Length: 75
Image (cartoon, rainbow, N blue to C red):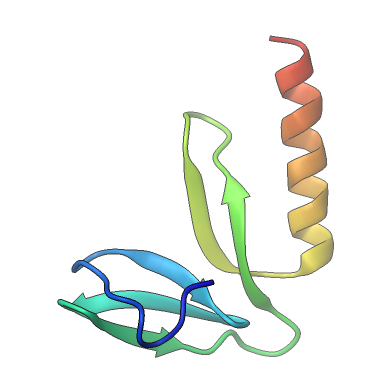
């Protein structure tokens, strides 16, 4: 798991606990709490390979992953 003390490079993004984090300076995470009922999640991209790290609901994350896996079966 990534923590506040995990080394990072400028521009890196991660979930630290339930919060979104971005590496603002070498080895220094800037923690941005998610609002309301949102948590930091990792989502698959739809139009290209890769992931997106953002604040969202767990239900939406699960739905997007299910849809991604369903679409991948057809490839």
